[in-house]
Image (tube, rainbow, N blue to C red; front, side, top):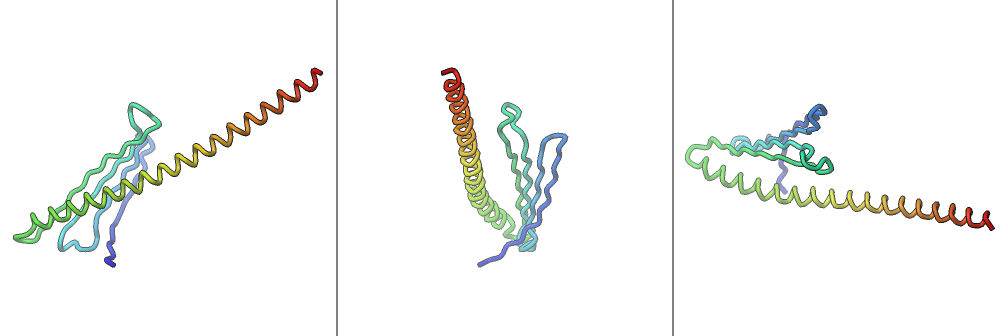
Length: 126
């Protein structure tokens, strides 16, 4: 198992409703440097949606093979981002399902209370 280390920084910009995150590798820096920046913000068309803008740079200073190393790093980055996004979507789906279950439970409780009130009103009229 290969251990990979990354250094990250996150900044919350509440005035702009944005979260800025930057990550870069701290191991294998002699081989290549990978820097990633992500900005999470509210969708301008729908405030219930979030957007992510992701940028990445892969660079290498190895003489003679830097282009090959950069292409390899970019391919690995794309593969890892795909896995990350699948995980991210899975977490969001679970959160939305939990929220939907809680909302359904609240609706059912409200309907039960309303039915009890109507039954009590009908009983007092008779």
